[in-house]
Image 1 (cartoon, one colour):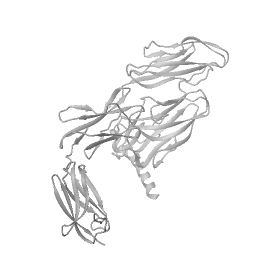
Image 2 (cartoon, rainbow, N blue to C red; image 1 turned 135 degrees about the horizontal axis):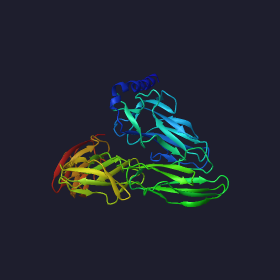
Image 3 (cartoon, rainbow, N blue to C red; image 1 turned 180 degrees about the vertical axis):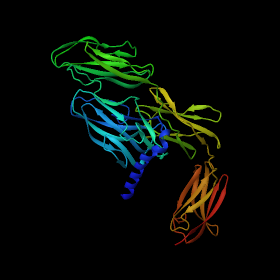
Length: 470
């Protein structure tokens, strides 16, 4: 235990001192975010009532780092009626501060392989439907002033800066698309965050009437073809103690942030946050390849999103590429495997790769792995060593054949007298075997001593001495 604690405090000491040497080299390409799902894709969550809890995940997306997360710093700010009831830090970790502030050192790095979840928490929603906003910020007395940072295990003497994954101060929201007609002072928003250019995303904004029916005129403060009210719009009636749902659909065509509000009557206006982002290629590391008995076995980690599939490709030395999968492969676990039986001579170099397919469109292609086809060993027609030898009372006579052919395997004593015919039939190419129980053709046990095994085939005659001991 003492050595483990020492390791923890050593890592924290690196956090405190590395900025002296490496702050100027901190990477601005590594991201940190808060998500509400285990796929780390949803930064917005909703509840159906007060005093419901949601699980949040703090995730570092390493773009530049290669060795895994060894230490990290950030703070979580919760604005609105939400209380973090529990915190869990991943790995063998020690936190030099108290949640929601983190200066964490790890005894061993959290492994890479995609986004790295460094902590999780339970958030209790104490009021509904009031929005809650969560921000990621630098801690007080940060290792790099005014920056969130982490240490990559591959470069333990350098700090890497972390930027919010959505580029803005708000990392995540709960009930962020919900409004009321009751005059609450909470700031309500329609939050889209980043949306892939060309794709559509719909958010639902609820408006309640808390005292008498209301006539509301619902619209947008801007003329923006990327935004549409796809549900109700114009003048609507909200019944007493009831609500209406307003669907707002965003289809970005560029990375320009939205500058628009959802307007409800003359008094209420709710900002709409969102921006387009370029499609991001799925991480596709090179497959690993192993040759076994003429087969090429490929495998790679399954890092695609749910529903994504894979095509496998092979390129010959002339640059001709074949797709080896008629239909895309469906990944069933964390590793994807594929077996190819190439018909190429030994010494041929083949390049294998795979592509990630989503809804019939290939998103990205992995780097290729080169495989040099091995020549299969030439099988000869011959007797092989019997097992066991010496033996009592039984041994297995082994032999190999260069091709399918008739073969006769017999046992003789030292005088040349035939003792037993073991095989007299056609056998397949490759290794074969037959058992001898130490008896002659009449079924009588033979005496101890040396015997000869004779193999006769179309292309070979072979002899081998064996020994029986009693």
